Image (tube, rainbow, N blue to C red; front, side, top):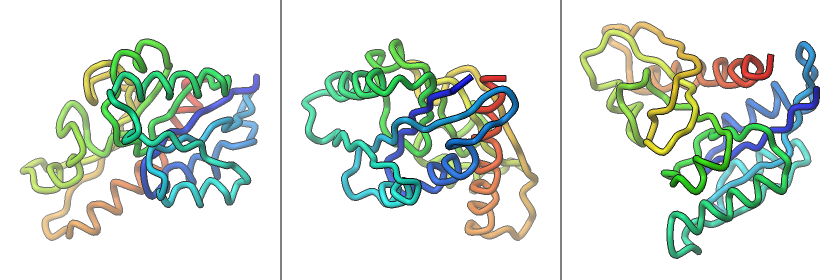
Length: 189
């Protein structure tokens, strides 16, 4: 079966590029995956260049041009609908989504902590500074409540005593690059 994917991002796009390398136009098991939409809310995001390496032009929907969160989400829903994507993947998409989006789009989110702990935009720092002995990443279904949808997958690692923030962040990103494509493949297998 051909599985059509939309990837939403806001910045650097390293998870976007990882997904494109591992899934775009690849046959895995019974499925062939194709990214039919790269969508970004920030006109200058580095991820736009990363998508071009795969001959994909990103659609820019600048959230600052909308009067309300709901109007912005309506534009997202419309563009995703036009693409025919069966699953939308939030890969560093830094917007809180309203029910206009969450009730109309089947989407998953990659989050850099072991949910339900450390929700929101500062998860990596909060997790690093915490007393917890383990840290990790989560992939979850997107719902109305921030970082609260049903968890699909998690991967963890042990924090070491003298680990620097840079080492910690690198470990988080390494796990993200593993877990996100795996989760997408598992959803459709």
